Length: 327
Image (tube, rainbow, N blue to C red; front, side, top):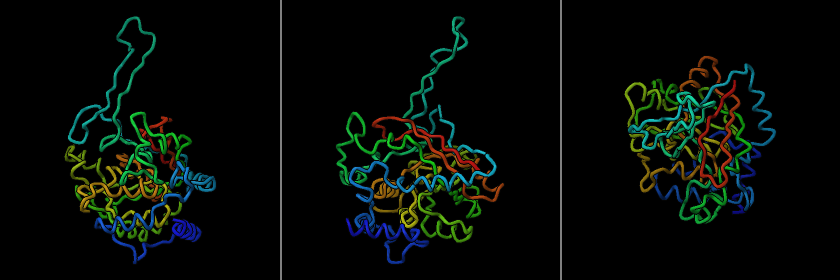
């Protein structure tokens, strides 16, 4: 463990490197994933009591640097409007109940109540570091029993209540491949991310939030909803090596992160497992990146200030979020 920590600090001091090392496994087999976890996971890197994981890389200096990216003051939401009706990709829609409303003659105000199961492939949300278990452990080696019927006693979403405010880097992989959207089952490999970086000459750096568009919502608008949990474009397990090499703190996609099926035997969602449990990277699922794609293309800009403010829920496994990109 200590050898790994020293290696990680050396990598960080050199800017995390710019390419995926040729000697690392391609993370396409259970054996390669097991070996990679043991060699690269960040457990203990920021201390035994760490609650933030890779968000520790979002330093005050990083926030100040990100704030300088605001030149126009134009902001764009990365959230999809919460779905209120069942569909193949919305098994648990938002329940929106009006408690007080203007149809009642005696009402002097309006009020409502929300009931939402936000995890899954429907709603824009942040996964806390207690969300994923791996062989009975969470990130940083805590026993999964510390997440009980009362909530997460460690690594809850409340650890991020001060917000995740950093440089956002937008990778429109659909546009990069010259299509309006990627078809279900299309994997995004580390080599794809590296090719995007080379072509755009945009360097992803330590503490960044990387936002990857597959075009999921554009496809939904064109052909209708489908079961994204079974068949979806997304990140292949090999992409984790790329994120780790650059010290990425947050990863957001417009799907459920992983390509479905994963293409890795015995692992349904290996990217979720490796990013959250092994590296302590916070994940945003089901972002709506269509408005961001237009804003980015219109400006020829791929980076901006990203602000994510989760709900302050003690013991929460995550939170619905409305991430904001500001150019």
